[in-house]
Length: 455
Image 1: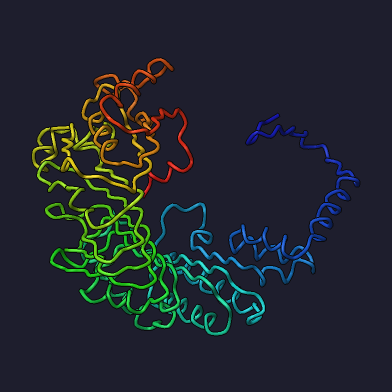
Image 2: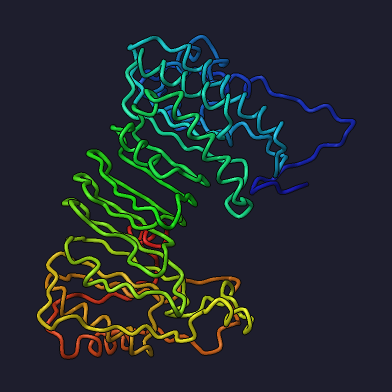
């Protein structure tokens, strides 16, 4: 007798021949027949939730299922679905074979579709940046764009090496590969609505060329890319609604004209200057800033940095060093801390702006890592309550649990655990303010707050 994944299995003796009941076979066939009798739109909705390999396999079930994979509206072709699951790393030859398999599958799937009969709502492709394979991808997708109705097309382009494995030469090689791919397939890039790139070294005009060519682009993510710290990157685009720049090495970045931009994620910038400057971004409502706060880093004065924009959602994460220590991630060696200038002062100095400063957009404040014995945090909350005249809700979460940190904290964390303690703390925080905001102490992470913990 064995328990496998929650199911109880009885193992029969080897010499016994198991008996399969006829009514069991009949019931399975009946079930399949009942599913097959469902209308096309329901079956297609089921297939839209599968990866492309599994969706293609359903064509073998029966004549009823055979044409359905060629009719699905959401096509997600991901190189990871073609990886041998038993392997954790791949040689160049193996990566080449995997990418070639994806190219072949892509051509086969798209070639079977009847032109303009069924709209492709989303064509999402994730593949490795390899010269010949990428160009084949580009030409195949370009042909589909020219012959079929496609609403959204997204490329996620991977490099063979992860970011922590790349050396300077790798960035240059990958940058040249991308430039070649881009030059061979301008029409394909011109039809993209989403693009994610990683580990590339751009020439100074190349990012601007990408933005100028990809006129339909709604979403752009750059991860671990660079063009030199002296680069002045001026971003203009009519359609871009979400821009994510993480761990990149650029110089000055100015969002000059992005009339549809609603969300900006910026992580890891050059520390002696403000991360961004804002021009015409009338719809921008969500900004996420993440950086390591070393002792010599230039402080970001939010009242100046955000002075000409009106945002509704601001997420700040300075990776512990200037606020508190994340004990399983911080550098603990004293000599290394001195060498890299890690901050020793963990209490952020919250300075009020001009006394007449008022914010009319902020409606919700969400704080993770709140401690009732931290007077700096309480003072900061009061400053926000005074400045944000339309503030409705304040959510104060205790520090998120980390399995690696358990038992390492040198001092106990204080957080109200009883109804009486919570009410007393509410009164203490609100003392001297005129805010009508409701203060919450959640015990369970709300779904709409989870995204604030991520990039």
